[in-house]
Length: 209
Image (cartoon, rainbow, N blue to C red; front, side):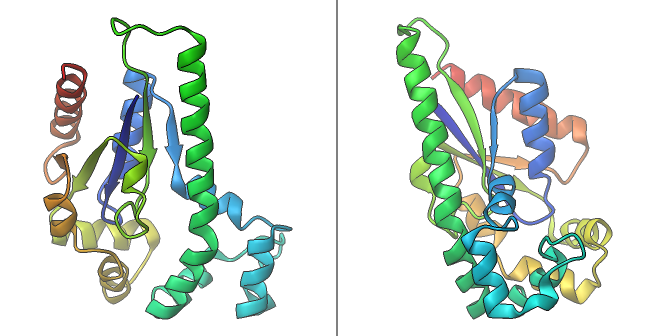
């Protein structure tokens, strides 16, 4: 199997790459952020643990967690961020393992031969390195964006002040370090077309190996 781990910094364009892989190559996208949201759905044990720790003022009018308010807490306190990660990431990891096992079973069921196209899936994991999930993938793609553009995009996307945007960026592993550990670096500092050409090359290069 070919299991592509998509990661990068917050606001660098990871979703853009994942969506392109889904639309052009019809690849399954397994998204850590989606699983993380499921983990804290109303009624789950993790939801209860969070409310117990931070209080009912984190509960929105519809019963869901106020993710923005929760983000303000954990991004300003490394200890609280680590606590939250310990709650959510085992659940997320289990979902990835389930998907990998299903893909492997489907491949075996089809009686795949070496001449067949290698079954491929994309694991979109923003904190791939930080939460030590690199063992789940066969190759790592890091989406890079120059620092100033990353700050600007995050401010616009999440309606943050510059200071809060920088704090969220600094809460993650430095992007340069992620690039050093990557198999593929996708530079999103130019145009979207330029980014897509890099994705096409990375797909083709991997398929030819």
